[in-house]
Every structure is written in structure tokens, then in C-alpha cells.
Amino acid sequence: MSALSIRLSPEIEKRLELEVGRLKVTKSKFVQDLLESALAPKDSVALLMQARAQYGLDDLAQTAATTNKAAQVKALAREAVQKKHAAEKNRDEQADPLVATPMAAEPKAKYGK
Image (cartoon, rainbow, N blue to C red; front, top):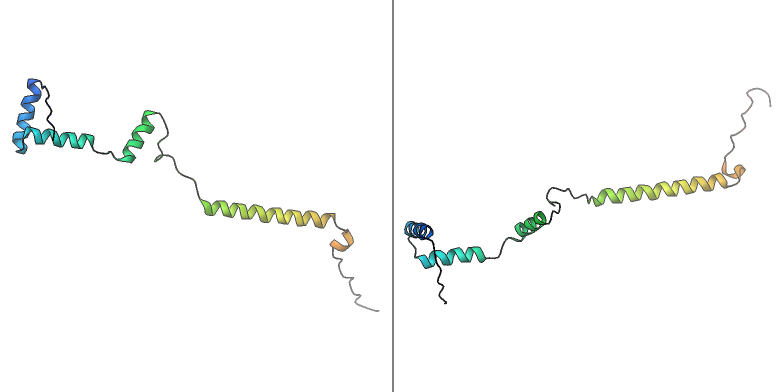
């Protein structure tokens, strides 16, 4: 373990002595705990949010993700069916009108023949 020497202002030294007395730990232990917490790995989500704010990027938590795959699949299926029906209708219209259009049956005479 290595040793570290630091200079403190009288005010900070007094506050340090009061705090270590209250916590009942040594100055070394108190400073070691502070350094460990300050140098500990940070929460990756918090770091990401801080970086996004620093660089002026949108907050992803505020922007709604619109990835409704079911709705996309339904829309694609509807589009495919509409295209199919349009193609069939177009094909029928271009076909021989006598074949494509069924003729109505001749009405039967009520009387006579």
C-alpha cells in the first residue's frame, strides 16, 4: 500500500476532523473510502445520459420508439392484397368483355311460349 500526502486548508482540516470523529474512522480510512467511491466504475446509463446532454443529443427516454412490427406487417399485407386486387381488376378490364362480363339470363315469358 502506498502513502499519499496532501495539504489541506485549516477549514477543510477542521471539517475532516469533525467528520472522522462523528464516523469513528481514521482520516486515512475516510479518504480511502472517498477515493474508492470517486474512482469506482460509473453507471453506464448515467454516463450515457450525461454525454448525450453534454453534446446536445436527444434524450432517448423522452423520444418514443415507434417500432410496432405487427402494425408494419399488417400494413405490408394490406398493400400486397390491394395490389393483387388492382392487378386482377385491371386484367379483367383488359380481357374480352364478352368473356369477362357474365350475361344476364333472358327473362322467361310469363305467358305463351
